[in-house]
View 1 (spheres, rainbow, N blue to C red):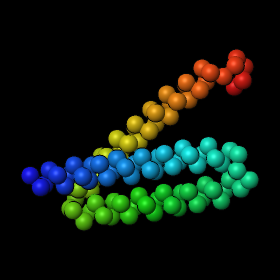
View 2: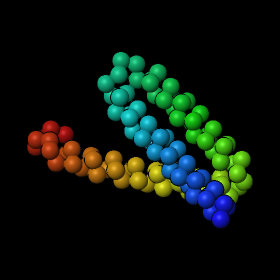
View 3: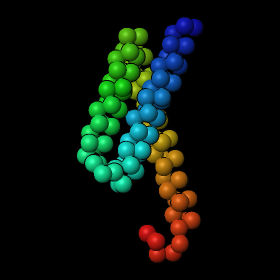
View 4: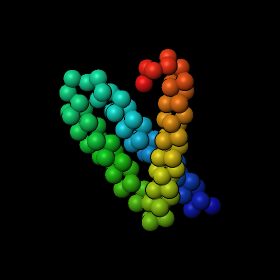
Length: 102
């Protein structure tokens, strides 16, 4: 039973890592459009997101390769969820804009 719990926790950790990584990417892109120094923001965000994600995968690897695979699956599921959330949010925003504003 503890094996299943460990894999579920690794899956949830991967989902959190994915939400952090791809949500942070979305945030960075939006902020870089109005930033005075977008290159610094993009580079700093990339380094932070990558460092946190690699560290999370390293921790998951300590539970064995099965935990790493579960963590990666959670990460990929979070990518799909965040991407769809952003697409739906963008469509809702576009519907509220006046005609010709885009």
